[in-house]
Image (cartoon, rainbow, N blue to C red; front, side):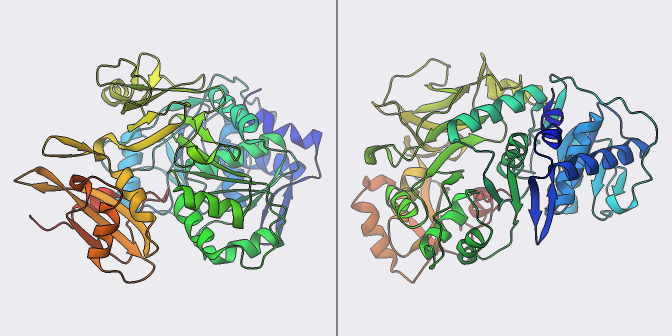
Length: 480
């Protein structure tokens, strides 16, 4: 079976079980099979063929999922294109990968690609259809969240993607009886990946895409009888700060976060106010799960991102590729059976990130004596002040322990004297004196790590995956 075969098999196994729910609409697995067949025949009639690269840029609806599954049924390769991107961002990604067509809710002006609005698809192709079933055929380009510079996207096969999903089911303990709340965009690797993973197992996915008020989530979880949920750290912090708000969350047995490690106090707050079943997953869109901090991890490991994920192994290496001993900071690298050979149509970046059977996600970190992985920052974000390496993540975590700080981002500040200085951008819960923040940092950090200045802003610039765009913050820095 390829991935779509495995999903559609649920039409026989549990035909009347709810598969997708959104705003009162419910589609069971028999309905998915019928609608995917219809949409796939429409796409064939529109000229989509096996092996073609099809961009998908639609709102986060049930129809998005049906169209994505229909692409897989035809045997096309999915190019995720975030509907929230500007026309220029879409054109950049579509042009680089030379997509054959773009499926949209409504056409986007000035895009040099054939666009097909879903409402304008032709009548389904008639007659017997021979759908592909090869599990080693390409499934999608697993794009990173960035749209500037040279796009990076490995071409992942059905088998590789299904192997990732197998590891998720084992490591995270998914159940076919779960009701999973998809509260992140379907373009985002977590939203798309967990939705497909749960569809393979025959569970129920409730779509509740952003934007929404984090304070309203507990009530939605209660009313929709949600048992499983994935949130990016930004939303999780807001939810933890508000607490359950009186909602009954006893059904919520599994809460997953990925993208950054939480501070130990934040993790404790999440487990006390929301659910004890909290997993922090260190993963990348390109490479899948790397490590996992499970609910039973000791308090001493609370600031880490856990031990190796199921079927995955991480190492710490130096610049030359030699493995470093525990306790040494270096480049994190991953080996797993689902890793592709490299980025599609990008040999230079492939040689940089895929080496000797390992994938290098671009993060720096170390493994402690018990094998728990601690991330110290992005290699490209590392600050070198007077020849000394400074890791932004360490400073950000200290700042987040101050009760007035909501979000923190540390960036390099060009300096004629030291080469780079440390600058802190903050969003706040309440006003705070910079000297108080400086003293807070000095109590936990060496003096050279204390930010030169604190810049308070209303909102952090983030991409569609919820990650802070530090290059945009660096552009705001005044000259020293």
